[in-house]
Length: 570
Image 1 (cartoon, helix red, strand yellow):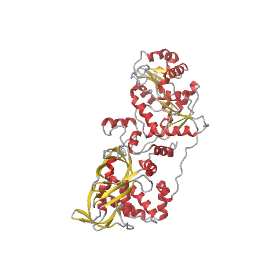
Image 2: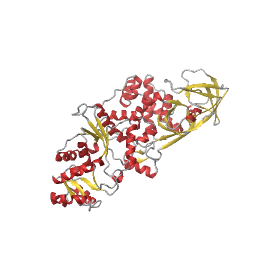
Image 3: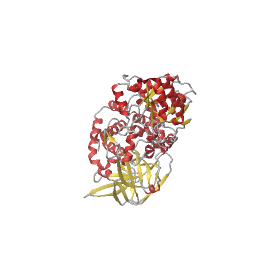
Image 4: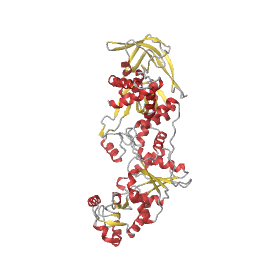
């Protein structure tokens, strides 16, 4: 149990409850709300209730004005819901030098893995700017490292964009233009801006760190021209590269003679063994952007130090220059987006695959129950700021919740169930709506005085207390000698009575898997998937994979297989 996380949720729920009730939060209501938001901790109710009560007392000690100020500062979305005010949608800022119908943007992923939420930010921003100006978006696969690329990844990226609702105006590959890139690279050699280098990779790395020029740089244009053809024939992998002639003492290390082309002996997934000399991103990006007519290239700010190199190449070749716009890279707290790390998780068997719901891949988010509209709103809300931030899952989940809440059917589910027999209870057939406000249908549930309720709920009540089974009737709880029972006391809905959820005796087995963060700080989280075993109302046996539901007082879920669901969020 993470006490700081429990406290954070308790503070939020206490502030919400206090705002609703004139500045005084009801501890019991706050406890119920916290357990509803953190259902995986219900089994630890005894340990966390004191934490929740302490947080509630802290909020109740504040003035109403201070409570409102804190709620507005820390949870503006909740305040907007409580006051009925609509949150202002933050539109993307205008682009400099942008003209209607003339803007062309691009999304250039390398097909070396499955797309994740970081890719979603890049493509959504480029796509929405293109549409803002009635322009075009190019999907260009940056496929110039054949040893890392697979047809599977091209298809996964295209499928991911389709799920996001993004339709590129043009789809192409950098590998389509290798011959053109060769011609431009040879021209850069003739102009003295590129040179052939035979140093090994370790020497190149050391010289760049020390700011030392290698011997090949001073051999003149003629030497590099003479050795150009050898790059396509006699040189083997790692025996020679083509480098940019920058300045080895430049404080911007991106200009210390970076590699522009290198030999890769691996077969390419599209071109096979046709080519062996491949451009690096630093060369392919400016050339492709210019040749494709890109007007505004939006990319994450990790490339910002390369901007000068980008423009120097285009200036030397007298080619048209797009406008570069950098934005902060998107990561979610506790969730790495590095393909190298994600691949290692999969290879080690620590996660199930690219669609594991703990991963930030688009497949993982889809399986978890996040809708593409939520990702779009989430990304647009962050805009093109360069300010580094690491938002939590809470923000994305709150947006997703607003979108799916009105169209999601409700069902009864009890985690960690305890049997309850209510004496003198009538046999009832109750009609339950699938949604409290919208017409999503209904179902009939039959009861005969025998139920299952949550163990955590039982622990919250005292012997003799009168409780209501939601939508059903009231009973007096009996807790004696470790046994549990109850006595029917009427069907009238008494104002202020505490309510609990339930399932009838003929409930079916159902388990909910709760994805957790992959990391806690810098430490790998070994407990990343909690499983809550429980019972669902009889109709849940009809649910099929891919259905989105809400288990009442537990959370929104995606049915993953028969009798198994993944918690999306509360």
